[in-house]
Image 1: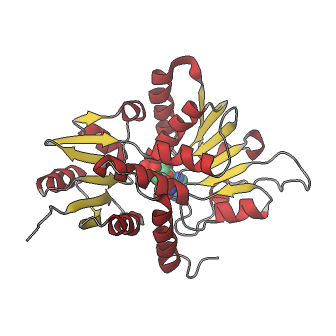
Image 2: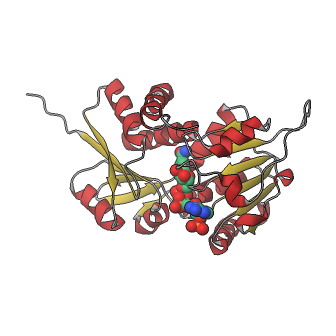
Image 3: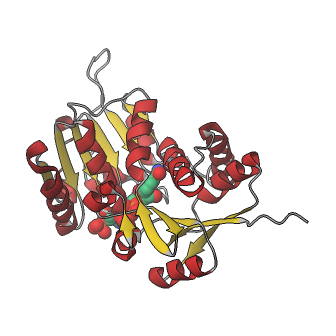
Length: 291
Ligand code: NAP
């Protein structure tokens, strides 16, 4: 009997059971004929979970909120971009060591490119200052954004991202920071929702206390509203209704997942297989009852 060691993977977070990474990775493993499992783990003690998974012979893990910064702290080795953003979403167990990578940076920048947009020379508002925002801000620096302004409920967390990234990229760009209620959409070309607001059908514009103005008919100037959330949100629906370009977080999720899979297996998987599985799972789990 030919017994091949199964590939064990998973996603760790709190919450984690909502994650659609499991169907995406399961579809790719099936397509490639790889035996194994990708499972969600909702945990209170992140360190214990990671050490336990390593002990059980897992090849790797994805890390989701709120543990991306803890993944950085727990690492034995980190990639160069993780050193800068101080947050990781992909763990590889190799030779008894915890190696941490960040594929959200790739997922964000490539999803924007795939949709035909560029951050080069643009004024960008990033709403949120968690692990995802850290990766997005760094991705924007690398992509040549002209202005990056972080808006966050907890002001100090936005300041910390500014300090961490500016200290690594030097004079390249000045990152601005504000509390959540100071945004003027007219100041920006790209507006990114990197908060959790929208998963439960909440309206981010209500939380911000301001709506974008309707785009004038035949206006050449556009704005891109990008939501990291990959299920339908009011943030996107309203931007669309007001006449602006929009992009949800589905391609970001697929692309970060594809790059994580490559880190674990050396194989870059078929993105369309992942997207198809993601769309199916979203339809099954989320579309019912949403406006
Ligand atoms: P996180 O580290 O927990 O950060 C959450 C952020 O949301 C913080 O800035 C937090 O503000 C803010 N927030 C949460 N609830 C809020 C509320 N009621 N009012 C105001 N602000 C609130 O999480 P994360 O890992 O950065 O993830 C953030 C979002 O990005 C999530 O929705 C996640 O699903 C999404 N994401 C998507 C992808 C993708 O591939 N599409 C990848 C990564 C993340 P405070 O700092 O004030 O707490």
